[in-house]
Length: 290
Image 1: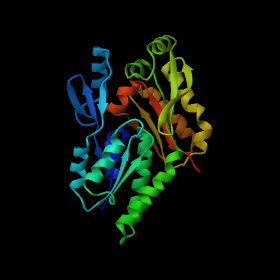
Image 2: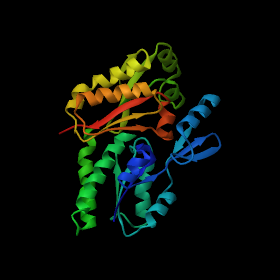
Image 3: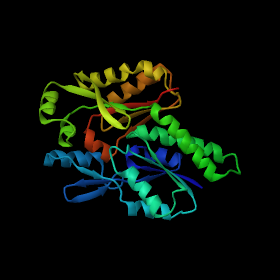
Image 4: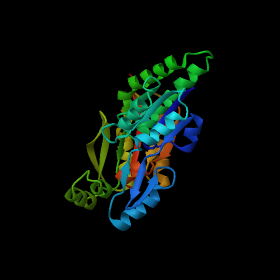
């Protein structure tokens, strides 16, 4: 059997996890002295409430090597493909590799550094699951060879993932040490909303928008129209960390009107991603054509 695993920062919905037979490895979220599992026993709204009450950002942590070993050792004879958040952002990638080495399963475990986050990872996971299912539907296959093929396929897609988002507040980026207090103060006062893209596994600011959330998000979405028209048409994600339903509907209707995507998927970011970007963040994520 070829198993596809992913850490919880992939932000796939429960329906998508079930549909594509994905297994999720949760990261840790720490609120003061209390520790929770992302997507298991903590919600982003609970996280925001705690953060605002304590004027502090939650801490997040990768699953330990022992925990990953427990997951892998349950089915030692299977082939594994594991997707992780960018190795430059977390120890997940390294811990998964170490777990495979400790178990002597390096030949069965392929750990993919997504060089991305949130549904930027999710796009690769779904591509992998579709290709796996197509290969397995043919009947008698060499599972090791098939798993190698899937891993190679998604690695070739990795650089074509287009992941970006626009944030509503700079407060959480400031609390997490990703922008200065002065920048957060002036940015919030001037209603500035940065667009942040993931490039080569790292986040970088691209431009700033100004105004009400509804205007900012639509300006951001429309700025990428030419890129959408050149995108792989299979699917696009609208991923948010808690946005007004009317805003989400406006973005969806805009994308539907372009007619360039077969499937428009909407997901809400989990607690790990939300702890860094704060509420009101929205991203449109897709894969570019070659």
